[in-house]
Image 1 (tube, rainbow, N blue to C red):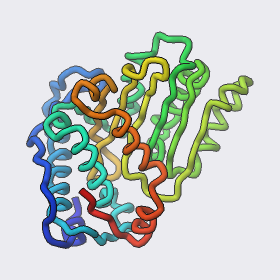
Image 2 (image 1 turned 120 degrees about the vertical axis):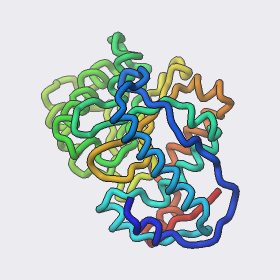
Image 3 (image 1 turned 45 degrees about the vertical axis):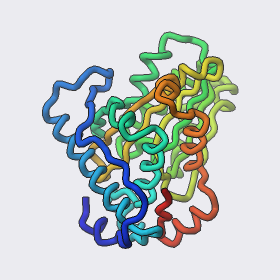
Image 4 (image 1 turned 90 degrees about the vertical axis):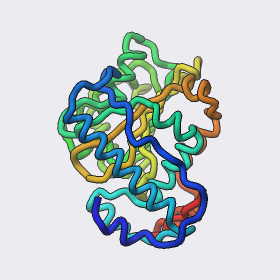
Length: 282
């Protein structure tokens, strides 16, 4: 991570910091324990950078000034993203969060954790009318053409054509036209009606994908992308079912309300963001 991250965060320590485990449970895209030592080392480095950055934020004051454009161009997470993740971890409990399975995602290949997990859980079903899929993301894998096309086709063929509703919140102003190219191949109007793409003019603090089973909510699950410290190579992701959240004592409704609040943040949060200020709430 750039040293600018440290220089930009100023203020006195306030509030009680959450202690995070120094190590994580790394899995492969199929959910099996990873045996790749290189992957383990890379994932561990990403995790340690996240823990280090969180500690900086924990020790900062109530409001944090930061160079938003520079952070964006270098792929550095904004303080707002760290603050949001701290809130999420607090809602789950630090110990329970650290025990979640993590997966190292190499952006140069076309393996997408959500696609693998969804296929494993629901791929055999031909009727997904009781499913709603919500992508809350940055640019919907735009940096990798092969991965992006794969996920557009997956959404079209494996979700929309089977009756699922798909909603996407993104900063990408080209996604609607790219989807249109694929969906125009289908004469099924319901397929197009079941897709909603919301383009937002700000950096989204929490990136996640929700597969919600409207008929049996406990089957719903989340795939979440930990904030990253570089722009183009790796992501560290984790996933959890609603049933697991409930069993851990987490209030699922409050948890999801918090996550969805990052799709369209409150006006006060957006005003601070436009002034390159993060509110370091506890």
